[in-house]
Image (cartoon, rainbow, N blue to C red; front, side):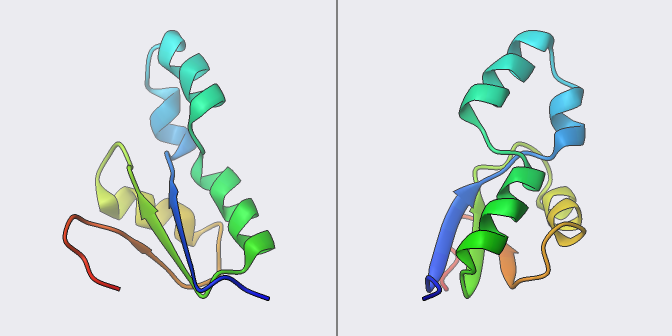
Length: 82
């Protein structure tokens, strides 16, 4: 059965690649890339995926995940209601 909502953080791989090597190692251990999140969402099949805690412009996160995940998703912003 599909989950109703799934909340998850994500960082675009292209953004991570611009960061210092120490952060890249940290991100590999403690953060999820948009590619990894797309794989997880395809398995979980939420009705709505809500992406939060993203490091750069929401439009960049939206554009990156939309090329990787066909399900319904939003890039959350403070005080949004779903």
